[in-house]
Amino acid sequence: MSKPIPIGAYEAKTHLPRLLREVEAGQSFTINVRGKPVAELRPVAPVEGARADFGRRMRDFMERGGRPAMTAEEIKALIEEGRD
Picture 1 (spheres, rainbow, N blue to C red):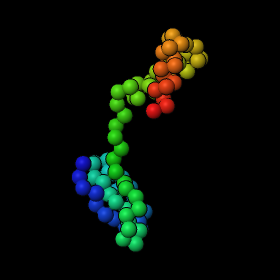
Picture 2: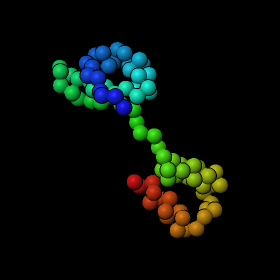
Picture 3: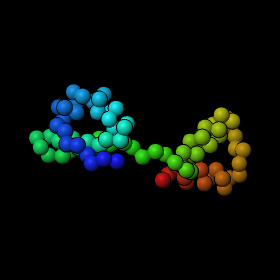
Picture 4: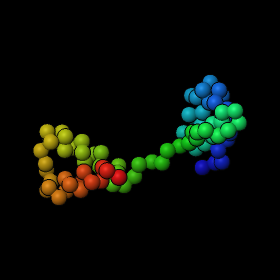
């Protein structure tokens, strides 16, 4: 990821669609108000591993009408995983 580019709040508001395209491409921005940094606009980290799988497993559970196709221990593990 590249070094954040400082921009003013007005520019961020006025050019948000363009800035979001640049963020998708990996660029980051620091948004300043009166020269003071107040926010960052940066790419988010992709969801990987167990957290990405959690949503799929929970959807499968709900599609079965909330009826478990797994043990109570597996259900508890899913619940705990969602609390991270």
